[in-house]
Length: 178
Image 1 (cartoon, rainbow, N blue to C red):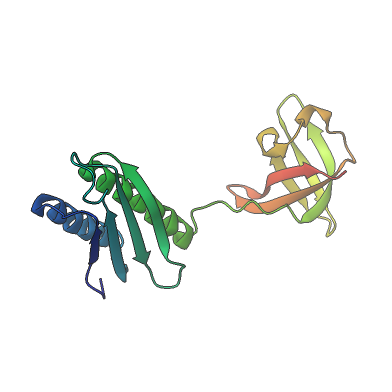
Image 2 (spheres, rainbow, N blue to C red; image 1 turned 120 degrees about the horizontal axis):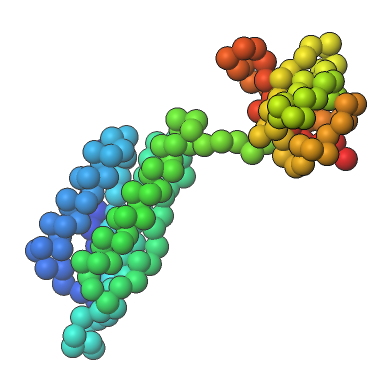
């Protein structure tokens, strides 16, 4: 991390074991996501009026380049160690999501844009071909149809996403135009 771990305790004196747990979990986050810029941890305790621990709240503020801060707020638990673990577990999941997004491994859910008409349909075999505006044929499988494949007939107007398949162009998503 570019900035050292910022640890703040309010209303609780952190035992050495918990401080070590927080430092170890922060180091683990940095190994998981090496571009992590900074990590702030705020641990709030019940104050002096409680005689027997809890409840504890743990908040994390993670800074990563090129993205909004990742804020984990209020992991509320009766046991301090569990509240710390819960907060860092949520942080790990959020960093995993960010990594997937940065690597492009999250599917986009854009509406299909290209338009075509069903040219040929092989209902028993579960596939067909779309005729595009530029006179090409694009293969599609029944599993790529959002809706009822069996309701399709030749000439039905559809929108679709095209991708390259093993044997040429194929439609990955086919939606009937209303």
